[in-house]
Length: 387
Ligand SMILES: *Cc1c(COP(=O)(O)O)cnc(C)c1O
Image (tube, rainbow, N blue to C red):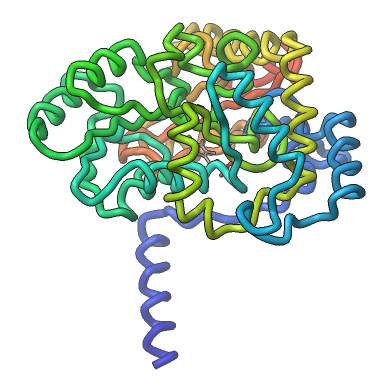
């Protein structure tokens, strides 16, 4: 039996190897800072989602340490048991204020937030319409409760409308998208999504993992960026990216939050977010609001790369104002070659390959931080122009 199962796993990995898609875990002890390795060979880090540099901000770390001293390390149980800490409640208050919503709910990760939320608001007779490049956890959340899942072509509103029309008479309809797509730095066409949601009576869900803290007034996200906060009833975010901590969250009406608390199994049956991570996140959110220059520096870095790389004739993906961009090379080989030449120039930016992105659209994802300088960005341009 063991032999057979080992053979099976071996076959799985042979297939992955055969398509050149094996991934390696690399050892980065400074993975969230703007340079990797404090040795004689520092590498510029363009692979982290620590957009504002808050994961290693001393004030954030101090606050988390104080949290550990006061509350201990783990929460010990789920929120409805003994795991509801003052820090969770305060964090939810701050998040609902940031987003201008009635209520908020925090989770131990963004992945869990998506899983709990979608599985709570959907049922087996409902249909979810997901952008084909939506984060895996969104689609997973729709599938665990056996909803019908229809994928529409990335940001293709005609395709979405065709699918919505086909499902006119069935149960509840939910449209699901990322606010900013992590693999290309494009915004979702939120005005059109709101229009279609209203036209077909669908609920709009926006996952703002890359936009919270980076986009919109005070970093309040994509809906606020487009002036559509009241039109997006379900907004999900993460504490693990711009907010430098770990955890996820949902903001919306009190009824929505209550529903997810009572029906979202990934919330109900999982240990609460470690309270010290909530402490650190509280500090980071307050800093991100008080120091808007971080957001400005981040967006300026991305804008600089976008215009300089486009001038070189490269195929640059993403929208102005987004916190990251990608350069599309097409084949797996070409994108890996670009990533390797960056690495030769001591710049770390990963090649993004299937199944993360569709075949033939392999790319190098460039995610600078607020802490990187224009000189750093110039080095990236030089390295890519030498290719
Ligand atoms: C990172 C990410 C998540 C998951 O958030 P974690 O806090 O890392 O679990 C969810 N959605 C999107 C779009 C993401 O980029």
